[in-house]
Length: 112
Image (tube, rainbow, N blue to C red; front, side, top):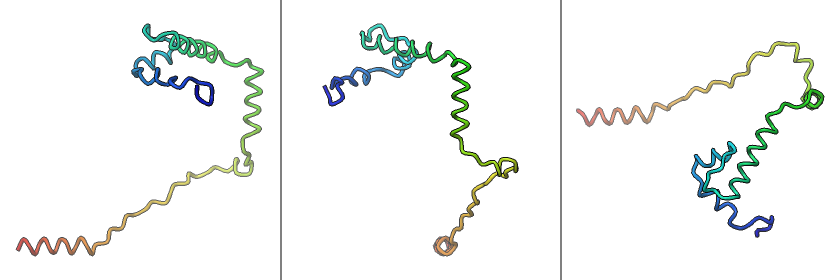
């Protein structure tokens, strides 16, 4: 066991899985040869998908939206004014011509 109470070789099981097997487990379908651990893990994801697919009750949704609205920063003065997009200043690349010109002259001198 490690300090968190998990077996030392816990991750070894998962490191041997292919991408296809991992996707199947995340979809709730364990490979037949996966053993009990993978069956339990696939069942967890299957149950989570069912439970989390249900929308929250209207009262809970309203409470969440109210909490989000309360936590959102407010800037009422600027909200009524249309905002122009702020684009980063375009940078122009300046290439010093001294060295390229000297190289070009040297190459031209060699060609003559």
